[in-house]
Each structure stands twice: as C-alpha cells, then as structure tokens.
Image 1 (cartoon, protein in one colour):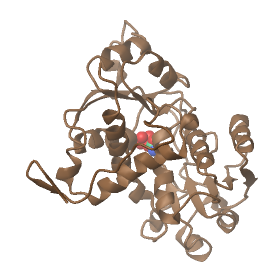
Image 2 (cartoon, rainbow, N blue to C red):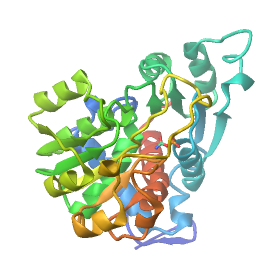
Image 3 (cartoon, rainbow, N blue to C red):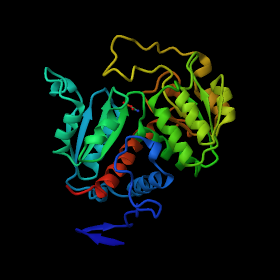
Image 4 (spheres, rainbow, N blue to C red):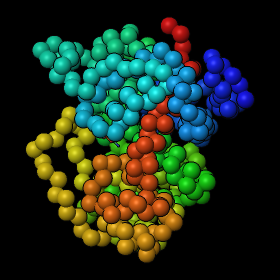
Length: 337
Ligand code: CP
C-alpha cells in the first residue's frame, strides 16, 4: 500500500521491463517484431489499470500529448485512443478529416512532413492511413514513437493486441490454442493477429471466409513459417466444432485504400452458413469465446450480445484500457528530445 499525492495506491504499477528486452519496440507499426514479453508488458499494465480507480490511472502519463493523424474514417480506434490519452492524464491534438490540413489541400503536404510537424508538438503519434507502407514511412522520419491505427491492408496492431488480450483472459493462455478466424481474411487485422498468435505458440488457425475470398499468400506463408496449422471451415457450425476461440471481422469489408467509401451500400444480408446466431452459439459454441473487431454486421446479430461467451462490447470497452496501457508504456520509455 503506497500513499502518493494524497492518494492511496493499492498496488505497485506493474514492472513492464522484462529481462528478455528492456523496453518495447520504439514504434508499434507491425507486430512482426513483437515478442511474447512485449504483449505481456502491455497486458500487465492493462490488467493493473482495470483494477485501479480512475484517479490512479490518471497519474500514468501526466502531461502526455498524443498526436492523432487519421487519414481514414474510424469510430472505435480513434475515439478509444483519444479517450485513453485523457484517461492516463494526457491530451490530444490532431485531425480526423485530412481536408482540414495542408496534406489535404492545394499543398498536398507529404506524410513525412506532416509527421515531422505534428511530432514536433506531440510526444507520441497514432496514424491511420490508406497506404500500406504509411506507418513504416512515418516511423522512419518521426522524432517520437508512432503507433499504427490501421494502415492500408497491411496491419492493425492495436486491434490484434486487444483481441488477443481479451481471448487470453478468457482462455488463460494462447499457447496450443486453435483460433477460428471468421470473416474476410484479406483484412489488415488478420496480418497483425497471426504475428501475435505465433508469438504465443498457438497451434493453428481455421478460416471461415466468404465465398471466393482467399487467404492471402503472405498470411499463409507466415502461418506456415511459424509452425502453425491452417484449415478452412464451410460454415459457422463447422468452425465452432473445430476451435477453442473465435476472432471475427466483417464478411464484407470496405476498401482499406480509400479514406471513406460512400458509394457502396452494405448488403446487410449474409448466407446463413456464416451467421453466428444465438441458437448456434448456444447449441455448438457455448464456452467458445468470441471477439469481433467491429463494425459488426449480420455475422454476429445483436441477439447474441447477452451471451456469456460473446465479448464484442466488452472488447470495445477494453480497447480504451489496452490503448491506455500501450500509450503509458511507450510514453514512459520514450527518448527525451
Ligand atoms: N476496429 C476498428 O478498427 O474499428 P474502427 O474502424 O471504427 O476504428
């Protein structure tokens, strides 16, 4: 029990420094370089934050300024990062509509220059972008840590960290787990998630993909190279019989290379084989934890929201905690300019 600034702190802040590597990777742009101990550092701090009153969490990164550079639409990722920055004692600057900046008008200011300009004001940057290599390009020139909030169709590291954290908490471990991946496997989330599964020694992955969607070659290669097994299922019922947990994404994706897609209307109809309804989850999938990246569609109807093993909105809420922990970790290990 510690008393600091008039507040009683019931537990010590978790020691996030492992012997294996003293700090997290400087940037969080790809999970390819993340080790098991890196996830565990962030999750330990997130678990600690879950148990603390808000006023204690608010002392995690006092004065931190997060630069929010969103070149593409978002609900969950941007707003949870903004909430996270405030929850840990910091604040934000940035944009969610690039047309209000010099990158989105006559000047077409480059990504590199925009990153260097906002990085001159902020302690950390979070970037969502339409181009596959945007996060790497930003990290290459940035004075401060860069976090990818989803770039092109490459990676979405923090969503994968979040989904794996939730599943780890439900299953007790990820080693030896067979994960069902339901939805379009060309999603950027899949690329990040598979790196995380490999870091924990998962046994394999079973895909349930919309008709005609193929698992991209590079994703298959990563699965093969890391010794995991790969299978496909033809229906939600078959998938649920084969796996320990399910990670879901939409079956109908927007174009990750566009800022926003307004011209295409989602069908909101989905072949019954792909729908995880409450009857099926109750019959076959009871006890199989299910997470979903959002935005959820007909594949996970609202009737499932109250099922004990469906953790969609729990994941949404925990996104703030996970991102709070990541920001606090990166902020505490930043290099002083
Ligand atoms: N999961 C996710 O990336 O959602 P948003 O597009 O709303 O940020």
